[in-house]
Amino acid sequence: MLDLTKSFNTFPIIQTERLHLRQLVPGDAEALLVVFSDPKVMAGHGTPVHESLVETLRLIDWYTRAFTEKRALRWAITRHSDNTVLGTCGYHEITAYHHRAEIGYELASAEWRQGIMSEAVRAVVRFGLEQMGFHRIEAIVDPSNPASANLLRKVGFTEEGYLRERFFDNGRFVNDWFFSILATEVDKVR
Image 1 (spheres, rainbow, N blue to C red):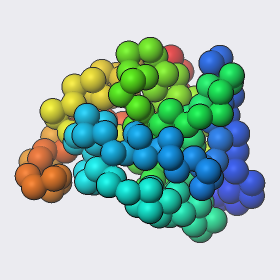
Image 2: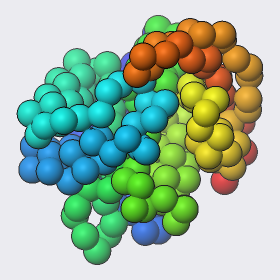
Image 3: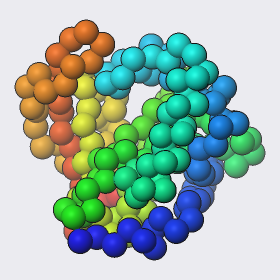
Image 4: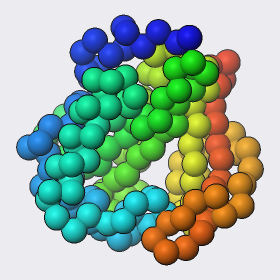
């Protein structure tokens, strides 16, 4: 089984050229509510939009507990020059026995098309494959979100296929579009 002890002793900080990825804290709730209350961001996300700060605080608490329990690792995305959270990226489904994790991400719509999320995903994927020892990282995309699929391809993921009407999202059944990258393909991360 994958030993996550090293990765989970203290919350890892990741620095990229423009970004600082750090642990979410309750003080991030207002900025994160902007992200999670935006219907454009949450379309195809699989959870309803947040309607209150309490919901966002619960999410931050869930990620904090899940990190402690070695079930998830989600980073707040900020710029080096500003500590305001722009979105999140990380692993919300870690299966240590199978050396596998599912990655997820969301970004404030005002920040779209600036390469922020591809920079964050690239760093988180490298960290997962090289530092955490994952063999496989999966991503599941709603087919109505081709921008997310394009981001994954750009980072080096391979499209695997669709699972029909696998997910119930905001009142409708949707297909799941599966992507993955393997540890043997870490050189594809670009």
